[in-house]
Length: 225
Length: 325
Image (cartoon, rainbow over all chains, first blue to last red; front, side, top):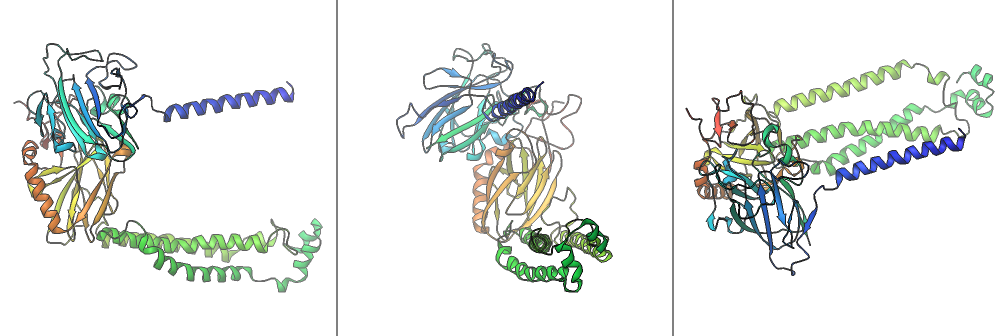
């Protein structure tokens, strides 16, 4: 092979290797879950209504048996996303439809409602500031933004619920609880949120799988100016 | 360079200059030593006086102040070493640059041969520095009672203060919470401690290994499940404290941080009593205070322990119903 030919082969292989490296790095850094934007549809300063649901098994995608959050986009469609863009210094009215069952908490501290407006939530219309996870149906998940001190227990449905949902997105025809809270967003920034219940069934410590994969039981509140 | 070498290699003017006037060759080593001595004598005190007070982790606690002193001593010891390297490099670049008339050959010759004085000097100097730092570090850890590090469940060094405030640090994926056993055992997301007080941090974990690093307090203690790792600090200033996890513990490790405060004793008492009263309902649901906790394997939904391990050990059960008998 001529010198030019050999040079072409080497350069070609280099370009392929560099492309693969860039693809791998970009793929690792970019979020694998889409961002749902709640800033465009709202008049400036107006409260944002955010509706999400938690399901015991999402029923589709790469991990159909995993527990997950979903969010309703401004058009009213359920989206499998945990990255939500919201405006800064704005009241967020969060409605959580909880379709999963519960259990006692590893740390009952997360039975406290914290960081919300008034320090309360409503559970099926009734105000609560504390839920005893050792009683009733227990707590299925929490919605928690650690850096903002926000944590809300999501009370589970009964283990023997007659009409449980097993395929997301769930409709309100299935057994569920509705938890509502409000909070005010801080200044711009990316605020990670997570669940404090180790609900990654089958994974060591319960914090693997959906608990450690963006798009399932954790994500970001992308607060923009 | 020897005469033979110079002649055999046919080096002209440069070699002749060195050979012809051997008595006039400056004593380079002493020049470098002089420059190094002057720079060290000037820069070391300047560093200690001007930069030293700003060296982390500050002086918020006695442990922090001790550690700041240690860091300053290490930096003051390191600065002359740093200067020695750079003085040698700079001197060589200027005096023995290739373009300089009369510069010796860069490689080989007599100058490159073994020099007993240099060898002995190098070994003695580095040995003294390393052993000196070893002795200094050991003495500092012993005389400063652990210097803010986690000492395990049976601390070797305990403070002499008559009153010590215990604060339990509970790590879990991915958050620290704090329990105050002398105030009814309430648990809080906030770390608030009083000023001018000796505090015993009892650090443990409910799941994997974490690390409790209260930067300004100069406290660093591993949080291991079923282990009570004790670290002490005596607060000396009010202000904000940054707490970070310093053991890679999973997806949200980078977000596992919070901010605490050192406040006046009066402000602390007001906060503690208010929080104790405000969280009394939840405190009743918490397990009795214990130095370690074993989470419930069945109730936590996470399969924390293998099925062949009884989650209800003799340790306190944290956040779970007692096992049915």
